[in-house]
Image (cartoon, rainbow, N blue to C red; front, side, top):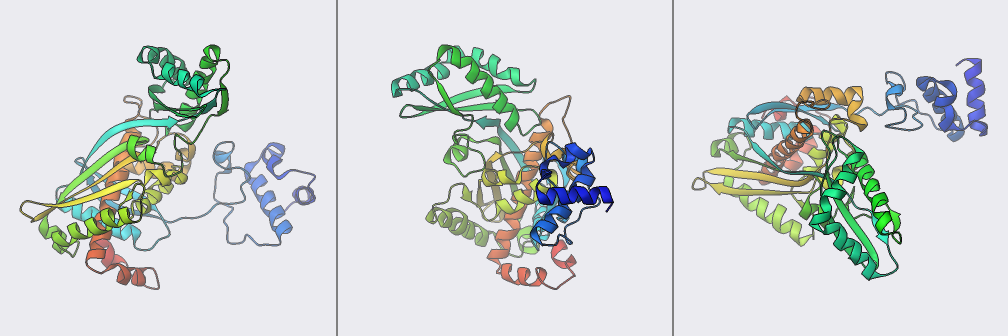
Amino acid sequence: MSEEDEEIVKSVVEGTTPSYSLESKLGDCRRAAAIRREALQRTTGKSLAGLPLEGFDYESILGQCCEMPVGYVQIPVGIAGPLLLDEKEYSVPMATTEGCLVASANRGCKAIHLSGGAASVLMRDGMTRAPVVRFNSAKRAAELKFFVEEPANFDTLAMVFNRSSRFARLQSIKCAVAGKNLYMRFTCGTGDAMGMNMVSKGVQNVLDFLQNDFPDMDVIGISGNFCSDKKPAAVNWIEGRGKSVVCEATIKGDVVRKVLKTNVAALVELNMLKNLTGSAMAGALGGFNAHASNIVSAVYIATGQDPAQNVESSHCITMMEPINDGMDLHVSVTMPCIEVGTVGGGTQLASQAACLNLLGVKGADREAPGSNSRTLATIVAGAVLAGELSLMSALAAGQLVKSHMKYNRSSRDVSAVASS
């Protein structure tokens, strides 16, 4: 470390130079991270030797992804697939530190592929934001509700909302009154972006517009949790948020026996007692599945999505039933809140962009705006379908503990489980 940098480190430790100002002060993001890191180690007396510093483009996160960086965390990325979905093959990147997860999803992909593939339907596509406003009376709050929900006023409100972006398209506004407080849930198409910022800007435009006719409206917050973001909520489970997708496949009986090592009847019974009845006994909200969040989180981290949105994005109900006189298995996952984008946020970082490129959905689709993010949502659902199939089969066959004890510990030969 140079004498100049040493002096800056000392000034940060002493508090005369704010740590957050290093990037602007130095004009060198990598150097700022190194100085901040050293100052932190001296201040805390704790070593960051195991946290990598070199090999990362700190310029790429400035002002958009992470503040005051001191390094980066390495998460291994595995590939499950090919996933045959809607007559196309996808190699699905999964960033995880859980042993068996990628191998299990890979087995599910194999079962789907050998059975002719999976099919998906995107039922809804709209991001939400719900501000909370307050009046002096419940009557006045209700008056705004009636005004906003009046069909004759929608075109005007949509025009005001859509000024926020050339991709923003207001779809609906649904209101809920709590005393003299009003919650307005805006739903908006957002192109290939996940869209939180876009919909928030549109909502602000509408609030400013409404203030003219409702000057007594007190805007308490741009988000009133009726959206609902990064929290389990019945409104998302029922109404959907982001992309709402159903994905299905028919798994041949011999594939169930030979690849999944179980049988159709056992899977159907386990799904009913675990994913449906067991979840109901637990009072689950959107959790009628085996481990959708495992797959969602791994794909989200690999592709630069907001991992906190795993909370509602993992809402999923897994259905299994015998068909063709009980010989084959029909399996589906219904996921009403897959919140993904292929532009903005972490999607533009090199590693995450590479994973999106692998899936063929990197960036914005200029010819059909929104199609890349919609395709990514269906891939997430397809990967969840594969994961549900494999884990449920392992449970039905009594393989779960055995495989985790083997592959989460000292064994280095995972080829058997990955290809079985």
